[in-house]
Amino acid sequence: MNKLQNMTVAMILSGLLMAVGNVIGYQVDWYSSLLGVLVIIVIGLIGMAISQVPGLNKLPMVFWISIVAIIISLPSFPGSAWVIQITKKVQFLAVTTPILAYAGLSLGKDIELFKKLSWKIVPVTLAVMTGTFLFAAIIAQFVLKWEGAI
Amino acid sequence: MDILRNWKIHLLVLIIVVMSENLGIIKYGLIILLPLLHALVLGGIISFPKFKILSTKQMEVAAGILPIAMMLLIVKIGLDIGPNLSLLFHSKGALLLQEIGHFFGTVILGLPIAVFLRMGRESIGATYSVAREPNIAIIAEKYGLDSPEGRGVMATYICGTLVGAVWLSILTGVVAKLGILHPYALAMGSGVGSGSMMAASVGSIIAAYPDMEQQIRAYAGAANLMSTILGIYVSLFFSLPLATKLYNFLSKFQSDKETAKEKV
Image 1 (cartoon, rainbow over the protein chains, first blue to last red):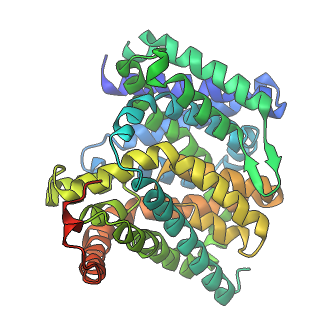
Image 2 (cartoon, rainbow over the protein chains, first blue to last red):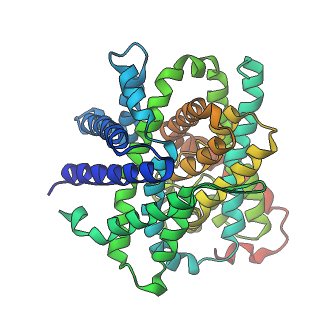
């Protein structure tokens, strides 16, 4: 089984788990949840296919998938209103939960490595994460004000 | 089929999703705990090596599915960018300039603390970036991973994987509740260039400002896309030299010659 088939299966599987979460957590019906997830998967697969094209594969898959999703959602793109309406039913938080569940299940292997580190890395890592988030947000705040966007 | 053969992982994710979504969003004062956070913590507990529920290989399968599942989140966010493109275009200056905060905020806040804790040259690798895979590759190529810089970047990578999303989710929730910074500014701040960290952070902003959900995701998605694309170049040509210079400067003030010998 090649890499692309594996990725397709993984995408469909994680999509189904997102639909489950969408039904349980946000009281959306099964039909809308599954249809919404299906559309999201199809867009993901189109982006994935494009990212495999020789030449285009110089840029990461996340770039191509973003571009495809952005183009499809442009108001001037035929059928964009339908796509947005269908995929809106899939809640953002429902999409994130299975992803972080997979992330959680992979943490065990990092826990062993973590034990070998000095405690010092904990405050340093927290400072690194805080710094990147907070400084970007503060700069954004000033420039947004200056641009009159807020 | 490698992915389907590891059905135990998917079954566990299903159980975790059902439990996390049932728990729902928990608000406790300034702190917002999202289902994604429950899922991360539950998953982490299940995978704890002591419990022997999962083998290392199974954990690697979970880690392998993660970036693919992440692509669906990227689609979901991308679909919010199109309808908001004119809004984003009106704030193109903010979108561009906030990246300065993303790329240098790690050094500005992290490096002095690392130097103060006497981490030696590990400080450089540990704080020059958010230490995701591309950043590791840069250090590996320049210094090798068994150098002090390499040990530093790996340490932040491991620690960031364990605590990054949890920390950002809670921090963002608190900052959002304080109401000093606009949700759009927070949204751009959350585009740190790591999918799970962005998801955790954006989730908290949306929980605090549900009526601006779509715009928040559009800003976050655009900022994250920029961090992802520009990240590798900026961290190689600007952040790493800056971290090195600042380290050399700050370590001058340390009288203790033992500093360099200390390991992370």
